[in-house]
Image (cartoon, rainbow, N blue to C red; front, side):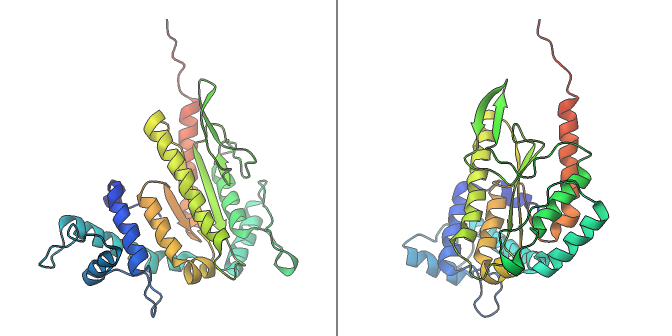
Length: 291
């Protein structure tokens, strides 16, 4: 999923309102389990409970201000994307296994296909990660790709590090030194409770995004950043509020795209070919001699 351009350039205080209202009025409808679109009454009541003003959202006559119109439009957009698109794209383990096995037979990959961290009968390949790795390999035109970085990502200028990310990412193209793109993969097929380990995965991606934003703003260096997640039960049945946070994070500019479940099948090859074009452009840049 790519961001809606309408919301990409909203100021930080817009997202402050999105976050505090989402937390106060709730992310989902209890009965329908759908993502909530807060009403004007809920917004006013929620801001009152927080001891905050709602006059910038709705006037005394009950009419939405310009800011309030954009805010409600965003809540509607977020709910529609999650209720109609994301919920239908998230897979279960059996579907992911079938797609993984089909790709392995069809593509005969040479890339790493890691195992999951389960034990006993649940021990198997990390299906979603394997699907992602195979799709990248099949579309990267033979270029290098680090499918399992074991070191921190660094960006350099003239051979000197200018930034090093605080965390190890799940993948980097073509390498962890001056990458074109980095990504995080969150697959949780066997999770029975939505605990802090799963929640922390979202905030880890946010940290990476904030560091990459700072890199763009202060060094004018752009590293593309992706989040890819799967498991319908974990994310939709137990973690819908965190799906909302992902859509927020996408539109705040902290990730370039979030790919949900089977969305990777069609979208990831297109993205990888874009990386390849950028890398080929870098390699073919003419040498500029300074006299």
